[in-house]
Image (cartoon, rainbow, N blue to C red):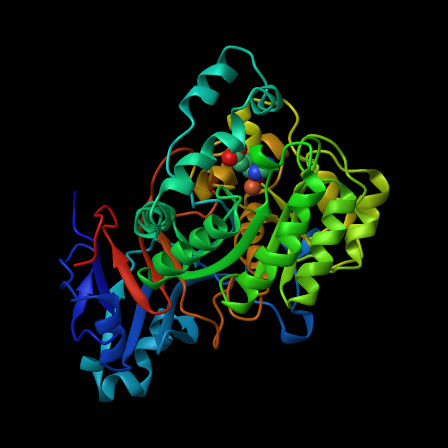
Length: 463
Ligand code: NIG
Ligand code: FE
C-alpha cells in the first residue's frame, strides 16, 4: 500500500501531479505550522456551484443543474479557506504571488475536473463486521425485513459493537472515512446506532469523535439510538424510547457528542408517535433532528415537519401530498440509492417527481454493513443517473451543495467560492459528465480537506 501523504499549503515548492510531493509529519503539525497558500492551476473544468448571495439556500428544480463551470480555472486557498477563484492566467498574473512565489504551494491540475469535495450526509460507520450471512440470505431470496425478523439485520451488528473497545471502533470508523475520502468525499455525517445501550451509543459517538480528530476532513455526528428496539427490550419498545429520550439524548448533548438525533421511522422499527417523542427530547436538548423514512412503507411526514428536520432520508415510498409539503420546506430529501441497489429492490426513490415538484434533493452513500456497504459517492451518482433519471449535473449538486445544506453547512461547504472551506476533489476526467459515467471506477486523483492536500490515500496511517 502506498503512503498517505499530507501536504499543507505551507509547503514551499512548485509541483505537478506527476511530481512526488513531500511527506508531512502529521495533519496537526502541518496545520499549526503557518498560514501560507495553496494554488490549484490549469483546471480543465472547475465546478464552482457558485450562487449569488441573495439566492443562497438548497438547490431546487432547474437550480440543481447549475454547476457554475469555469474553464482554464484556478483556485487560491489560505488558512483552510478559499480565497479566490478565477482563470489560471489571471490568477498567475496576480502581483501577490510574484512578490512571494515561495509562499505558495502550486499544483498544476493538468486540465482535470475539480469540484467541491463531496458531502456524504448519511453514513453509519460505527460497526465492526460486514453482514455476509444477510448478503447470502438475500441472494437466496429472503428480504431485508424477513432477515431482520429472523434475528439478522441491524440487531446482528449489535453484539460486536457492545463488545468492542472505543479504540477498536475508532479504527473501523477511520478506515471508513479514508475509503470515502479516496472517492472524493471531504465532509461526512456519521451516525451511531449499533450499540443500542446508553453506554454503547455514547462509546460509538466518542469513537466517531476520536476518528474525526485523526482525519483532516469535517465530520458531523448523529445519535441513532433509535435504530431498532434491541432484543432485551422486545415487547417494551415504549420503555426503550423512554431510555433514548431521558438518557441517551441528554447525555450525548451534555458531552457534546452529537449534533443531530436520527430515528428509523418505519415498519419494524419506530412509529410516528415514537419519532415525535424522540424529536421533542432532541429539541429540548438543543440537538437537530433527521429521520430515516419511507424505506419500506410511506410514513406521513407532515406531523414531523414542525420539528424542522434537517433531512428525511430514503423516501422510496412517499405520499403525493407529502411531496408537495416538502417542497415548501428546507428539509432536504436525502436519497440513498446504494441501499436500493444492494438490497436488490426494484423500486428506487422517485427522484424526478421530487425534483420536478421543487423538493431539495441530496444524495448520500448510506455507508453501512447491512443495506449499503459502499463508501463511493461517484457510484451513488451513477445510480442516481441510471436508476433515478437524474442528470449528471443534478446528481453533482445533490452530492455537494445540497448535502451541505442537509448538515446545516450550506454557508461553509458544497461550493467553490471565496470564504468557503477549502474542500476540493480532483478527478482524472475531462468532462464532469464522466463522473457518473465511469461507474465503479476510481478516478479521484487527490482531495483538499480544510486546506490540506491528500494524495495516495491507501495507507492505514498518516506519514
Ligand atoms: O439506512 N434503515 C435503517 N438503517 C440503515 C440500514 C442499517 C443496517 O442494515 O445495518 C439504512 O439502510
Ligand atoms: Fe441509513
